[in-house]
Structures are given as C-alpha cells and as structure tokens.
Amino acid sequence: MSFTAAMGYYGGYGMGYGFYFDPTMILVLIGAVLSFWASSRVNTTFAKYSRMRSMTGMTGAQAAERLLHSQGIYDVTVRSVRGKLTDHYDPRSKTVNLSEDVYSSSSVAAIGVAAHECGHAMQDNQGYSPLRIRSAFVPVASLGSRLSWPLILIGLLVSIPFLLELGIWMFVLAVLFQLITLPVEFNASRRAVALLDSQGILRGEEVDGTRKVLGAAALTYVAAAAASILQLLRLVILFGNRNRD
Image (tube, rainbow, N blue to C red; front, top):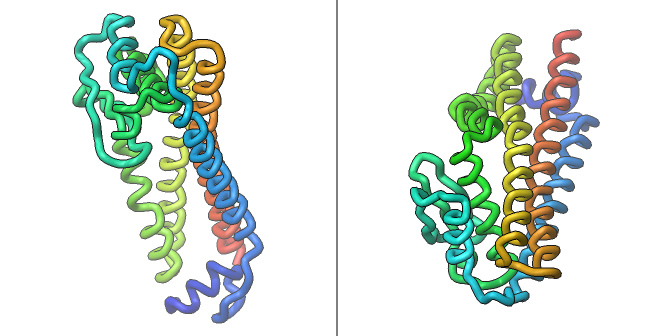
C-alpha cells in the first residue's frame, strides 16, 4: 500500500486512493476542545489568584518548607526551576521543584501550587499506593507513548495488521498512565487544601481561592485523559473497519 493509499484509508475507511472526510475526527475535535477549555480555565484562575496576596505574606517556598516540616519530612529540598507552571515533585531526587513565579510569590495561587507539590512529597513519604503504581508504570507508559504512532503508521503503510494492533495497544498503555495519574493528583490537592487550612498558612477566602486554583489544574488532567480515551476510541473504530475490509 502506498503512502497516499494509507492516508486515504486512514482518513476515509479505505475508500480508494483519495482523501475522504473521516467522521471519527469529531472525537479528536471534542478532545481538543476539552483540552483547550481546561488549559484556558487553569490559566485564567491562576492569573486571578496570583493577584491575591496571602495575609501571612509567606512565599510559595516558605509555605512548602513549613508544610513539609509539619509532616516530619526533612529530607525533601524545595528549589526553584525555570519556566511557567513547571512545578513538580521528583521522588528520585527528593525535591519539590517550584517555578520561579511560585517559588518567590506570596500569592494565594503560588502557595496553593507549592502545597500541591508538597502533597506529592507526603504521598511518597507515606508510601501512597497509587503514587507507587504510577511511578512503576512510567517506563511502560513512556515506551507506549513513543512507539504507538510509529507502529500505527507503519502498519497502515505496509498493510501489516499486527503492527497496527500493536501500536494501538501501546497507545492503551499511555492512556492507562493518564488514568492512574488522576487519583494521585486529586489526592495531592486534597492534602494541600486541608493542610494550608489547618496550619493557618491560608485563611477563609484564601483557602477557597486555592481550592479553585487546584480544582482548575485538576481539570487539565481530566481533559487530557478524556482526549486520549476519545483518540483511542477513534483508533479502535478505524482498526475495526479495516479488519472488516
């Protein structure tokens, strides 16, 4: 099968060698809209509460250290990293990495994000099962993410159903990783909000603001998972049609 034929098949159920409209593309478009909406919401919400300075005046870095120490965690380092919203916890180096805007800012948004990453450090310290499962799944998911589309395209180009099917299964691994990530992220946010309140780092409306920031951030994970599931559904539909031809 030539490249043109493969692309014609992929876009229109193998109906000759031209390009045909693929109705399953609506699934991809829905996923793209969901992702765009979630990204816009988190940016808007973060920007809003970035302008609200916390009453305690603590920076994201100071709040992170206080939260970690309140849980008896002293082997985790809080450090600044470049980029916007590049915040993450690295269990290998035992570091809470905060973007520059979060590390030095005393806004409600910055403290909320810093606390969320501390939530992951607490999960790691307590041996939280979903986090361990996600960490163990990283190599498998990474492999699936790298190989899925090359295998799918090669399978289409050379008409080898096995490669196409293998590519779809690789894509399944990447989707599973996103699903495993959801409870980890939601749990970290719940820990963050509860501790910020109990430790008095944020108060009243500030706690509500942080809850909204972290809730918006969580939606990006939900949207990404939904988009991947829709893409997987599209691949399964196309693959099933190809098997019937």
